[in-house]
Image: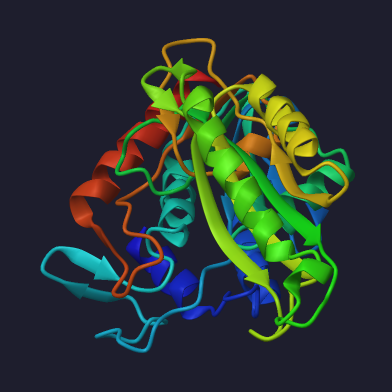
Length: 327
C-alpha cells in the first residue's frame, strides 16, 4: 500500500492537473490484475468480472496546499508512525488501500467494479459525467473518503442557494426616493433566522438540519442607495422533503426577487441503523442500495495531511471483509 501511495502522492492532481497520469497509473495496475476497462476519460471504470455485486468509488483530485507545510506535499514522508503527503487521507490513501487489497481477494463468479472520478473537491464533474453516460453502479458501493475508519451509511443533503435582491438607486441624502436592496436582504435574513428553529425540529438519528449564511455582497458606495444585494446560503438537510420546503418558503419570502438554486442534492438514508455524515460526498449522487463511506484518518484539507499505519492496517481488514461479504 505504501509503495502505491508513494506513486499517487507524487502526481499533482490539484484541480486535476495531472489527471491523465494518475488515471493511467491506476489503469495499468488493475490491468495487471486482470481488470477490463469499461470506460475511460478523465474518469476510469474497470471491472474483473461481468457480474459485480460491489464497487469502489474514489476521486483522484486533491485540494490545494498551504505554504506552511513542513514537508514536500508531493512526497510521501514517513515519521513517527505517520505517512505525510497531499491527499494521503483525502483520498489517495483510500485508493491505495483498495488497490493493495485486491490481490488478496479470491474472486470467483462475482467481481468488483472500480470507479475513479475527477473534480470531486469543487463541482462533482466526474461523477456527473458518469451519471450522464449511464454507468451502472453495483448495488453495494464503498466510497473511500476519510472517516477515521468509521463506517458511515447515510449522508445529509445539500441545498446551496443564492438570493438576488433588486432595489432602486438614489442619492444618500434622499434615500426615500430609492429602494435599498441591502435593507430587503436584512429583512429576509431576519425572517430566515426566525424560520430556522422550525427546520431544526426534524431530527434523524440525532442529526438535524444546519443553515449557514455564508456570503453577502451588495451596494457600491455609502452615498448611494444600494440597488442590488446578493446573499448565499448553505443548508445541510436531513430529509428529502426539506429541500423542497425550503425552496418554497424562500420563494414566498422574497416575492419578486430572484432565487438561484446552485445545488440541490437530497440526503440519502440507509434502510438499516443510520450513521449519518455531516459532509457531502459522491455517495449522495449515486443510487446504489447500500453505500458505505469508509476511509482513513480524517484530517483532510489541513496542512501536513497524514494517515497512521494503524488506520491503514484496520482499513485493509475492513475493505477485505466488505468485499468478501459481497462476492
